[in-house]
Length: 271
Image 1 (spheres, rainbow, N blue to C red):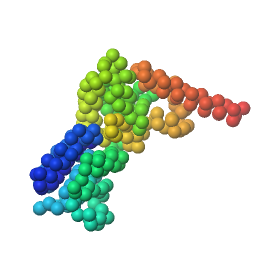
Image 2: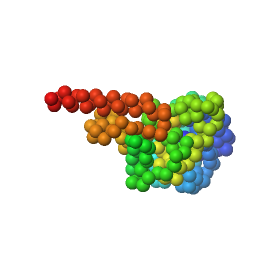
Image 3: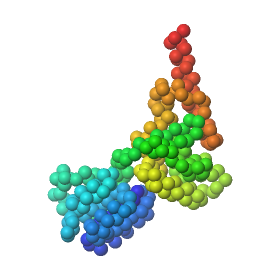
Image 4: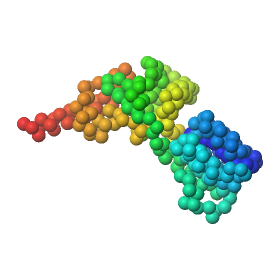
């Protein structure tokens, strides 16, 4: 996740940086000593989580939170305070939690894990078709990825859904000739997320620990509809699913059995 931390005390900024160093949930971290700088950054760059000190001059943490939410309603706010008497209900801001100073690394990780479970509200309509090939429509416009590894990685994420994938999973299926620890997965994931960012759907991929997963509640997808028993989706299935990828054969066999079972049941019900 893309994280910012705002505190007017430079020593506390450095303390936060050292505390979270190496935390897998954090993709990028930017520290700000002034609320105005943080607000300007958030207007020009995507932010997933904002840790905000409450007691700050000019623009305090509560006011900053309100302005950040005006910039992007999906920014998850976590207040940082030395005063236990602050109640989240009184903040008047859609915050998801708070850190009480002095905090430990596990306290920060707990709040980040909570933030990772909060699904951002979709800004655009995303439709994903997987039969017979992958097609992504964003507000009705096709997302052009070409026949690249970025497209295949996205297809793999769609296939695994909320179960998610690790770098090892991706290497085994998409790059079986590569060794464990090869950076090609991370490079491809980074390029894919840049493409999604350009299309305005960079919240489509979530992170939980070492896993990346597709935020399935943000999309309409024929695969998920069929797996949930949607009769319309099942009737449209012609036996072909992500046909260009050999790793999709196991899923296709599952879909075939779903279609066969529904067909047999239908015949039995209508002799």
